[in-house]
Length: 278
Image (cartoon, rainbow, N blue to C red; front, side, top):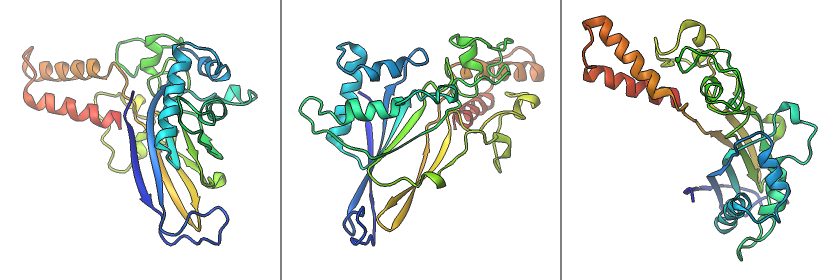
């Protein structure tokens, strides 16, 4: 079971006169949960969530995750590694975020009390989104969803669009009209960015997105206060290490022949990997 990270945030000066308000100075519990509610193909999570009575490893995993949430009982919850519907599936209702809520969270699991979230936010992810570039540097542009070549060359690692996405649940009202997402924000437009060159070529730098999934600013109304829930969940592409070693080796050979990379090159590689993951 992935660790559930919980942070309690004090909501100060909240007026009790507001119907939806928490008591003044009450704690509001925020949590993030890597629930591994991602699946191997598009639409599979939707199928699993739609049929909660089936007793298989997938449904048991979902029920176990729901039980953890019910026992910890956060007021605001970010669930990572959750496959959302993509734009082409907009006509499908209800979506996986609603099915997880109605079929699992709102149903007591293993003696735990059900938990209700009146508000939810979900949006598209960069994972599994076709980039058109050879981002892992293996000489091939992956064009076929479901293949490793495609997953490694997507803007964020994923075998299909949206795999490993995320969703936010809240007991407090979400100001949907004020939500900001930064999924398409370019890495090169970040002031002081540390894009590794020549890890990425100039034409790749022109289209690289900062988020491997997305960055969200979700305003949540807690009494008379607005709390901005800043959300992201970086994911590294699996082939990063291989390309880093290739770049380091090429740089070293061009400078001093085919020798072992010096400590400086290894340090640069480590820094590159960290900056790419962010």
